[in-house]
Picture 1 (cartoon, rainbow, N blue to C red):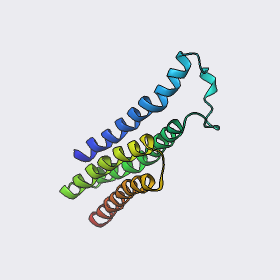
Picture 2: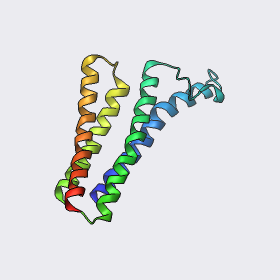
Picture 3: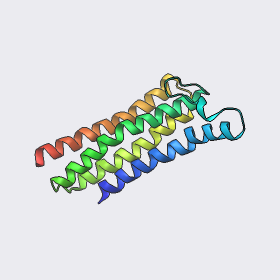
Length: 138
């Protein structure tokens, strides 16, 4: 049940990030009359630097959510339940949230990008470990 809860947390985080960054930025500009609804084009990212980073951070969550979902699905299909699986799923969400926050909240210096990459790499390794657990226990 913990992998499903962490997947649900990942999805909730993806939506919360969208709402509190991209959504808040766009709605504040529309409601204040500084922008029209049609001014936010998908093929031309404009706006403040943090807003562009927020769009990328949200897209990154969306890109990784299906990977996590497939792994949780495979765990359940093959009936794999293990404390290591639970721990890896917790690590994935525990690294995803600060990765997004570092991406949005800080100007992207070499140090900040290194921290962000380290948090991503923790998730990547956790995904790989889950794949290995599924492959070897199947």
